[in-house]
Image (cartoon, rainbow, N blue to C red; front, side, top):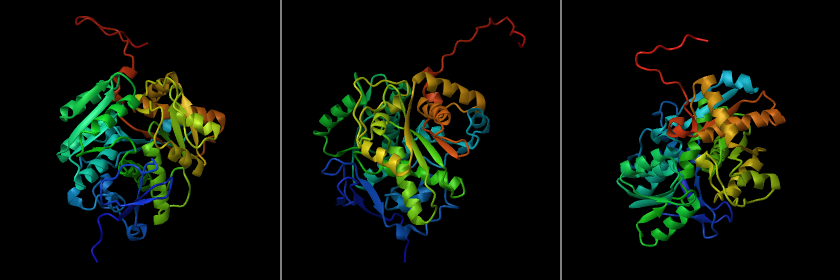
Length: 403
């Protein structure tokens, strides 16, 4: 019997339980919920990624693309899981690790979702993709769409990181800047799609396969740890796709027989945009958008995540929590980590390191746990987060003696 490249069986609504056909293009459920890909995990039980190429496609049995020939790839995946002994000791979390997504194509973890989402869209006959973005996702999807020969329509807030605009333009995307938030960009995209029937809306959780790319971070962390799950995992949470995906991956791995212990998941947000934290503290099942969301960590400036109920469910099921930090705290954490470990992380990733300090001080972290922080992108994509105020020396001058 020939082994199947993918064991994808159907799509499922996590809210109403509806079962949908995975062989056609799908968006959200009729009830408005995102859809989740489901697999024949009995058929995938023999999956053995060891020895395969070091990309996320090493887990192809639990990814939705039906044939290797349909994979659109730039070599994404298998990013380093780095020990951070100096920083960990200083903040009282000695067994501290970082999954560094700054080293994937496009410089952020968005490449994972784009690789799988674009591959599946092209396989199902989509001719173009459209999405609002805070920057990195649009850049990643535009570049992968170019790789697949698809068109792309992208709208982003005017104050999104400049480099992400350049990535979209370089990829040949139809790009528009919006004087507003990602929610305003989303409204414009939805309106434009009415006249573009061959385009797919690939907004966050408006299609089911971005999650599948993001969940591979969970598979990699467990594989890189000798099939051991961390005790705690911190994730910078805007739309929360990666957190939802990692929770899904841990459930799948448990069913595959890879692991049994639970990982406590932590959603980290900024004080200027903390809908998940507010909902968690209130014991609510869904979030409420803040009136005027703002944070320097632009990737987590998402006022109302479509999958908020899935994020909150993941926290509850894993006995996790949600934490918000100030921009000042995350910027300080970014500098401290770089000085301690030589790791220049994005502001969203820095928010998690700031949250670690709060969790340790509050006693939520005892200090003996194995803790993994998701750094979702490279700090070099956010040059404005570090103020450079250093002396200028004349060409015929001399550098001062050491203090």
